Length: 320
Image (tube, rainbow, N blue to C red; front, side, top):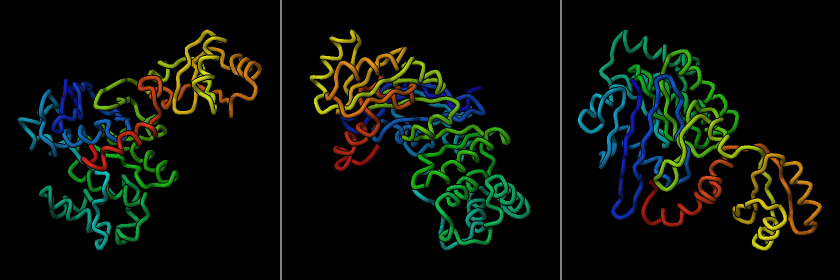
């Protein structure tokens, strides 16, 4: 049985389509990533999965329970960490976990044991008496995840878990998530807009403007590009694009003020461009395909450009 099954889910905010027929499954013991810019539909889908938002159209099951007809059953199976901090800074780590356990009806020795186990799994047992407000961002995130594990959920839902963390804390957080998957058998679904995080997932779904534009393992998605990627930055991208297509006979994609060409032997094309168009570019870059390249190929723009595009109207209508 799949841990999560999403089938033809649609959601609207008035006339705006936030999700347009999204379908995918998450198998047990996977780390599944939902990658996409602001406004892509990630948060809307996250809220539906966590039963915070009613399902308008389609079908969603979580650990065999239907989010529409059996939301209470869904809640028993999931642990949720939201993007916004949820710790009480004036309580200690232990006290934060204790009060979370009370919400799930845990008490006495059972709760004490679960708190100790959860703190041990997240590597925060030595911080039990520390006040939450004194912790670093990375430690706060780990304590929040420890809270979510007290009732032994089958599925952990994490909304942008690395927000505000430095690279070192982000790396350690992902080590923790991988241990939870490998040692405790927890299935994890993560929303992210960070390519390096997406690369750590077992499977990925790429969302853009409410559509699931790709679904597969990170290496499978990179194979959609194939070969090498040559990126050319120029002050005259339109004119240079036409000249490049005529000279090389290859399609050239415009991304902002850059030009992008997919090719098997990138070093040969790099040399040809450098020789044939001196003075018409600021830089030439050769690299193997990345998930950023996959996003560009599928959407025609960079993730940062998609974020900027979403932010303009979002200031008026709220982020989805």
